Amino acid sequence: MLKRSVTISGHRTSVSLEEEFWQAFNEIAERRNKPLAELVREIDRKRADRGLSSAIRIYVLNYYKAGE
Image 1 (cartoon, rainbow, N blue to C red):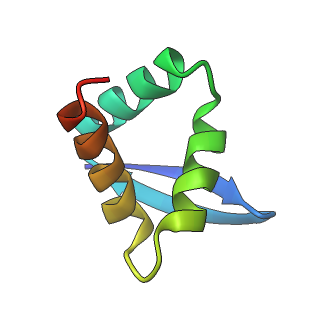
Image 2: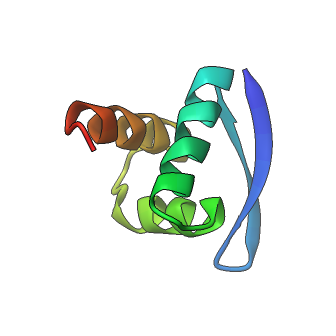
């Protein structure tokens, strides 16, 4: 498990993901030509009552399920 700090709306928070999820998330950001921080903000806005780490995992899973 790797913990990284991210800033969302001016607030720092920690996100813990397995190394494989961090690698996949970084790959998605590169493919979409977006900074990782921008994707985190997008996910944060849409996550409802799910934790941020879980929301990122679901985002990564859905991305690859969609075959993008």
